[in-house]
Amino acid sequence: MTVPATTAVILAGGRAHRLGGTDKALVEVAGRPMLAHVVERLSQQSPGLVINANGDPARLAAFGLPVVADDLPGFLGPLAGLLAGLNWTRHARPDAAWMVSAAVDMPFLPPDFVGRLHEARARAGADLAVAASGGRRHHVAALWPVGLADSLQRALTADGLRAVAAFTDRYAVAVAEWPTEPFDPFFNVNTPLDQAMADDLAASIGITTP
Image (cartoon, rainbow, N blue to C red):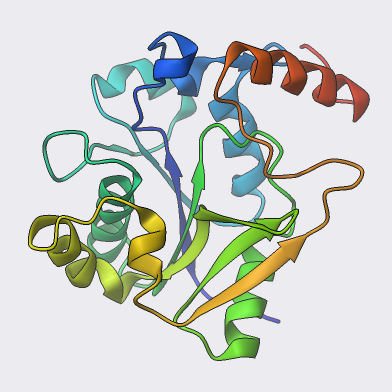
């Protein structure tokens, strides 16, 4: 299918407590920041990328992409990052009616990520679509209509929602499933052990240290 204009937001606004509070975007896998891996994979699928990150945006200037902080104060979690991405899209890319999201700690995103999400949503006639692998939904790896921005803001401010799944449960959701062999493309890095496993996985699939 023809993929409509779609922005991609990389969610890098978390505080990475299990990685010692380091900047997760700059944690290295195969000798490169995880953000570099995600940017490389998404840039081949979406012409418009934006990074959601809090703190000094200058630390990410080398990636040459817009950096938007959460619109709401208080580190409210990934929903706040999604809202920032949706608001940026509707103001900076009025041609794009859709946004995909992915977490910065998913360095092995599949090359058909954006297209498969659109295909699943269109086939089901759903409001949005989420990725799944191994029977588990990855709610931050999803396709969102930009028109949900106001509803999401109300959910965060008036309803106190914090879990992404609690928000998606309000809508008709299509699921796009990916196989986990030879590896799970949604493997995410949350701990030093995960980082070591990601290095091993990268080597096994031919991603080498530059």
